[in-house]
Image (tube, rainbow, N blue to C red; front, side, top):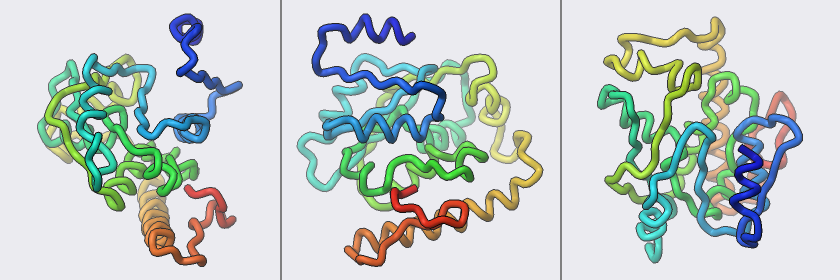
Length: 219
């Protein structure tokens, strides 16, 4: 994959390639990429998935010029038939169908790198929740991206649940999921309070603590 990307971007000065020496996980990797770019609009794409031809154009057209709107969400194409409730839930929580202004990403502190969110696979959900809470956006009624199911990827592991009524086929969860959920909920409340103080320009605004140590870099 890396060789193909290098070949495609050769002699194209508007591309900048970054590569981790080792797997850092999606949150740290995305945050590093955003920090390295001067682009005003951000798109995110995982290796399993695909942008359809008009995705970037439709998102750009929806936002430009649209003062007062800061993100765009599109519909998602999936080969597998999902229950309607779950399809909407997936579209709201994943970020491959999102275009967001960089200023919003910077304000909310990027994707969460707290261990809590890694344990419950909630980095994208947290990011979306903060974005939707603090910024208004637009929705495009077109399936502009493809969310692909491959053997044992996250989508594949949850397919049975996604094809059933909510609550009918719960997936296996860690034994300490209730404790983790309480910790996540508490952290989210603290983080929302931090962003509200930051938005109000309070000099006392500080991100909540990570493992007992107050963070100076956001999530």
